[in-house]
Image (tube, rainbow, N blue to C red; front, side, top):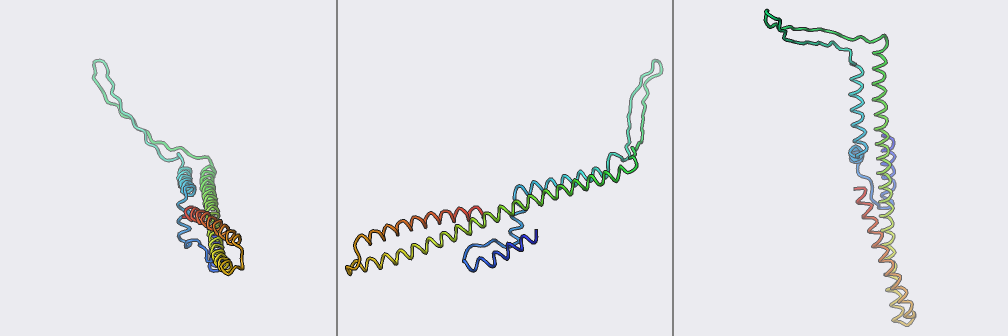
Length: 201
């Protein structure tokens, strides 16, 4: 698990400055987010239940048991009598049964812990996927915004050329159409980036 977080941290450190893109939050926040994921919380509860089952198997139903009873008897011409009864008993385990019970409890805990680690791993994969989606959407938005700036400069140049009669009016119309299309594209990519950011948040 530590290796996976170290890899993500190294990837973020190497990628984010180069692309000026969003990065993952600090490792402590990532761990907290993973631990609060519903599937991980459910797996933690199963680990706690497995530990309780392991303790029950370790102790077993082989403790001393005290049984008591009280009754009232009525005997003709002699009256009523109270009778009390108590018994103390303790079941025994066959040889080796205690060891097998402890092993069964430990195996149940180990299996539950493995399932919890798997749930945490799946949550980490989901977080990584959301991060990649956000990274890609933010890069797409940045590229689209740069394209709009380039087309704005190009349109200004073509308009100037048209004023000097070096470009046809149709070229201005084509440049305006391309700029409008690019502006629509940047709005769509900004929406995708915002959706990806909301998912990772």
